[in-house]
Length: 325
Image (cartoon, rainbow, N blue to C red; front, side, top):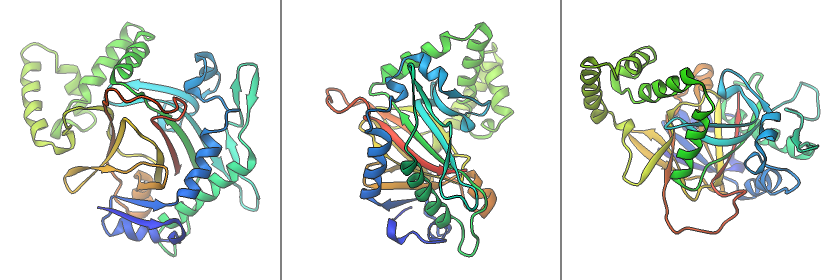
């Protein structure tokens, strides 16, 4: 289900062959490269990360979109069971004939100052993203235009903090906005034949209606028992619900003391090792559209570990993502 290869073995079409053979993810062994990225993107104390920043700095660095996957800069997104992180997101591009990558946003506000990532670091991120993209494309099919995404995602150490941040986010909305959040939470509970868009919306609207709502909830409970993709082990809390990434691929590394990423393959959830020695790569929906690869359903869980202390709050439970779109 999960294959492994060394970074030196990445060549045009190498990832495409492994995904085509039915592997849900590939672990690319590259501890030196991950150490280089981690040092440049998370250990440079001159850069203030958004989870260290005042809220107004996050707002100044937010470059939003109606589609969360297209938002850049700094953002926080807390919807119970759907998303739960504070993030810094950048997009890199390089025009044909150009020697260096360009980045959006070009800089980040830090109080009265600006911080801009170094050009050498940006070029290194681009080179790694390009090599992974070339390996994802089938041999003989060079990748077309794309940009490399670099995302740093911070998750919380305790389940209670996820709940508090979700409550804080909801409280900033008006009455109808809060009602919409409640409807979304019901809609995401819809399983089986009720889960597609449209039917899940209808379920969310009707689930609390007297008589009819109880009937629908009873049907949904039966569907949940049959839906293995909704299984959650005791002691785990769903933070990011099961979803497909829209991009061509996602490559993950990081410090994940309390966090767990799983991919759904062979009718069951499989833990995906996320560490600072490998890049865990899996395809998204753009790879399905462009190359016919099966995109991978995945989710993020929190595992409470009482009494665990220490570590660096700047980097604990942080995921570094390199991808392309």
